[in-house]
Image (cartoon, rainbow, N blue to C red; front, side):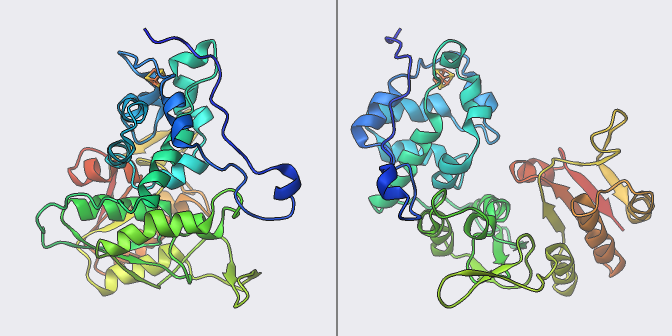
Length: 335
Ligand code: SF4
């Protein structure tokens, strides 16, 4: 049993007198010595609850043991088996409500700094030029278009490419990254981190990024690098529906925040849907089951796609794409 260290190893930060004069990231990240010290706080639980608290089920004690041994690159590769964006999630995931709140240490003391260490191994991997491109399965001959290069699009693209599908990411704005680039301020998530550690590795793996549509925040970057308001954005759901029709896609897949579509979402009589016909989708939509600005436009986009001759559509969340494609979950909609 390792000796319990009750508090997290502090992470160095910019001095307030300096940081009030700039927009750079405030936390500076662990040194290797600090990372090892923090990783050694892990108890290596036999039943690690931290994994259950992680939405993508990273092998947390496994990567912490590697960090404690100073095997940082191996730790980064282990994290990336479950998470394509550790440099990003290590900075902006709410670990205090997910993995860290479930940490055995958190019952009496401060949890292990899982997010800080995830960030550390990702930054270490990027800084030492050893960004790993995972092994790609033999080509399946299937082509997949992913609309939007935000975190969901990137995760889906990476998972599908590893399965051997040919993936293209379509993005409306100047830079790939979606909310990671345009929605999170520089001092919280530096753009260099998104571009360098995440998207560049995808592009180097052979992905193509083409502009087609985008949603979310209606801003564009001017020549001086300032964000200015835009009069409109192209609707991402509708644009992807048009794209899926025009290229006669075998499957129109919408990756979103929920595993399945529900009737009476978030109400006591909520009912998850595994399958819907086009006629049922139109009826449920007309009955107001799908919220405006949320599931509503996704269902409408699928209705348009199926009405234009599309074969089948699927709605699920990024972590369940693989299971959904095997028919184990998700909501399938057919014409
Ligand atoms: S719950 Fe905490 S102490 Fe246990 S394995 Fe996970 S990080 Fe380590």
